[in-house]
Image 1 (cartoon, one colour):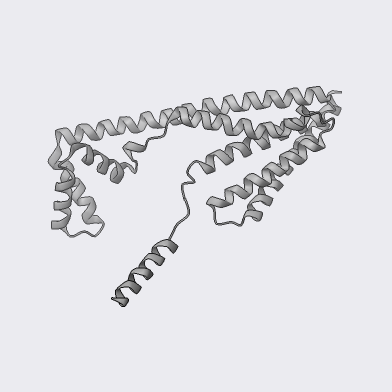
Image 2 (tube, rainbow, N blue to C red; image 1 turned 60 degrees about the vertical axis):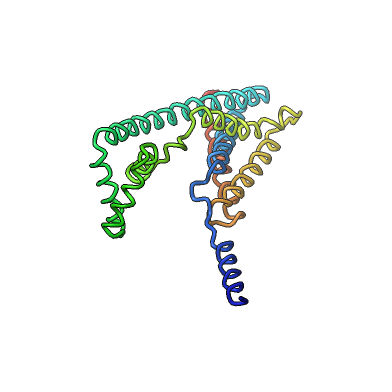
Length: 243
């Protein structure tokens, strides 16, 4: 009895320890990258305008315009992209649904062949395919997973993608503008807040990667800082040339 309990405890401990990272990133990765996109693009825009010796009012207006334009652009692009992808998937599912209705025996044999190719014994593969094909909707789901690599019950929503992209981009783009809205009279508070936000976003991304939080944070900080520095320099050059 004690041996059985010990084995059960070891099995439970192994199951608890044998976990994997979320390789798809779930909602976290697109949300964080959307925020980083807003941070980097708006910070670069504002530093570029500031580098051209523009007034504080012009810098703030540029930042707010960049926030609105970027957020709407991201939302529209994400909606169109996801909607097109979903429409393509639904069209392929319709093709598979017609094939299952018109040629059920052929589709069952195809499913059995897939399992045989993965090492299942032929007789068992045919029996599994037969049982799975008994329910048309279940058969469609299995064929979609095996042949198309998709889950028909878990298709992405264009509206959710658009709203989340809009929100995450707008939140990131707001950070460089926020110090000015709170009364700051210089560019450096906006730059510091944006760089801190970039470090935080990079550190959060480490939750779904194998990198350490400080490495991921410093990498994003360096990339965002480089983008801001280059655009400031370009703004200064263009401002001098135009002026």
